[in-house]
Length: 204
Picture: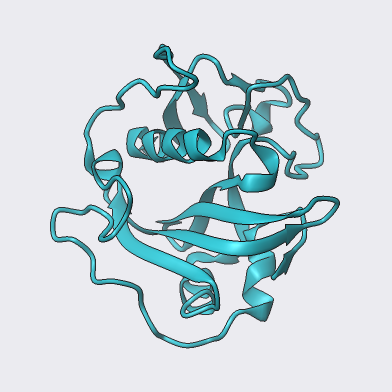
């Protein structure tokens, strides 16, 4: 599977359009079969362990996408430009693009060009994809893990992503194996960050 560096939406064009779902959702809201369902259902975020010592936790807010998220302090996030704040996280310094192009950071949060409904259907039963249905802060969502995804300008690796339904808009929180030296730790941190997501009330 070849994926452009832009967004998860690129997967849909080659996906099999079938209404076949993954495992039935856990009535507690966890992801059935996920490695650590408690990371999804826990009301609080446990400090991630990266390389041994525990990291402290801080939080940031994305006004443009309308959420607050907790993350470990060893990760760097950008505050500029303002509409890209609190959306990308990495251990190394980086610059967010003013034109909204996704940077190759360890963890990225963004809205897809495709609607939630389109991704929900379009990624169903795709070869090499595993999926778990769940809810994130009251919103329906699914976790997907896909092998052999090729990123433009990079090698082939695993895509690990949450897709969350925000009134029809697909909010994606992802991690690519290509962009992380310790992908196992990055996936666990992403689990905990998604568990901490709180969506802000829409003003007006």
